[in-house]
Image (cartoon, rainbow, N blue to C red; front, side, top):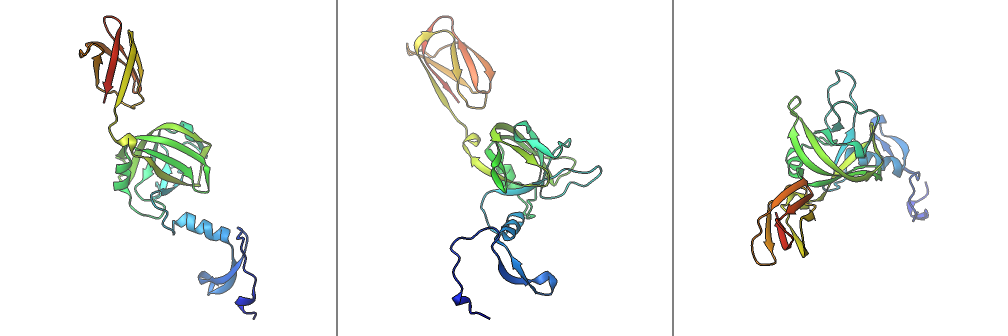
Length: 237
C-alpha cells in the first residue's frame, strides 16, 4: 500500500470528499465516509459543544401519540410548514435533542429576545421576544412558550432541526425613556418602545412637576394631556 505521506494534501475540503474508516456497526468493515454525512451526524446529535443555542426538532403528532422529548410542537397541530411570522405560542420540551435538561435555562430566557433558526439554513429564522414560559400542566416535561414576533424569514418545516439562541438580555432588564417636548404643545404624543406600560413623571419647563392625564395607547405608545400647551420632559420607567 502506498505510504500516506506520498499523497497530495487536499487544501479544499468539499462535502462529497471521501476518506476511509471502519464501521463499528458492521464488524468494523472498511467503508468510505464523507464530510457531508459527518457534519449531519454532528448537527443532529450536538456532538460538538456549540455554546448557548438549544437544538430541537419541529414535530407533528399523530392522534394519541405521546409528545417526544427534544421537540418543538404546537397545540393544536399546525401542519407540515408553519410561517415564523404566525407563531405566537408553542410547546417546548425541557429536554434538548441531546437529551440535556434545560429547565433552568428556559426559565432564564423568559422576557428575553431569542432567535429560532433552521440548523441547516440560518436564512430561515424567526426573531422573537419571549413574553412568558410556564410548565404545560398536562405534560410537566414540557413548557408552554408565548412569544411576540419581531421579524424573520421563511417557515418552520416538519422533522427539521431548529436552534433557539439568546439574542439580547435588554428586554429582561427594566428600561427607561426620557421624552423632551421643546415647543409648548398639548397633548404630548410619545413613542417610547419600552414594551410595557411605564410610570410617567412630567417636569415642565417652568420647573414644576406637571399634573396631566396619561393615556396608554399600547405598550409602546402613550399621550399626555394638559390643561394647556406645555413644554418640558417626561420620564418613563
